[in-house]
Length: 372
Image (cartoon, rainbow, N blue to C red; front, side, top):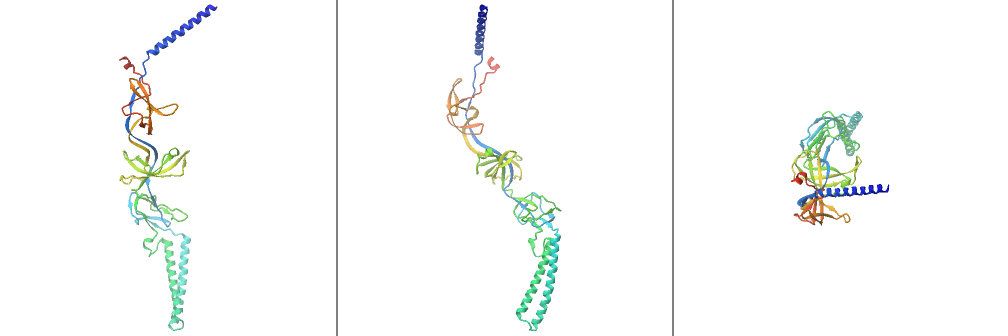
């Protein structure tokens, strides 16, 4: 029994030994690992973040009526340029029944007062001519008569204004004729002839008849995520691209960052605005979607390498690369890095443009190369 066990152990040892020899033999037959190399290059590195938004006018003016009624005529169309004072629309007043009746009653009352004062004036005049009353009494009677005449005219004009929205003698101040208050382009005319409009007052914004803006002063208006807002600041340069205008980039300056964020679909967004360069005369339609690249940092014509080539010391976390010193022989070089755009990173010190940098991905010869 003991002899059988001993023989089994010896056989097992021989099998393990032969297997180890075979593994080592196969290991030695494998092709050696070959590392490729790359060199640094001179690049312009731009560190940026992107915001999405729209191109809108810097200022929009909403033209609203100061009287309620029905639109009788519209004198403009979207896309036209207008100047301050140009006619926008004409409104036909639909009088309020209560106000109309009150104005009508005021006219009747003023007429009665006028007729009564006229009789008094005529009597006083006759007495004055006979020397019965003094000049002062006659002057008071005349003044009262003229006052009643003025009250009657005012009541008639007020009745006409309530009925038609205007009256004779007020010229361009007639509020049934709506005029432009600024120079600019008509962006939108949201009403049509026959539409009812509401006047703008302390309790109501009123109906917008037209939207005007100076299209030569456009801004980018967009939003950035809360994770990016801490990286940006006012006066940073923007590079704006408009989807509808191909192969064109517009320069702008970031001049507003909202102090308060807004929750949108679970993410906090901050509004930003950037004024486009006025020197560019390209016509951009209001409302076009656009993307703005916010330039956080920039390094022009600097020595750079791919970020994938950089390794970090496990203890000190200092960056380094390995430089080829001979055939598949490398030595470590510590680096001083600058800005990065996520693909390329600036190298301030540690290597030169001619150094060959080890690519860390192992490359084995192809079967065709191995057999040649």
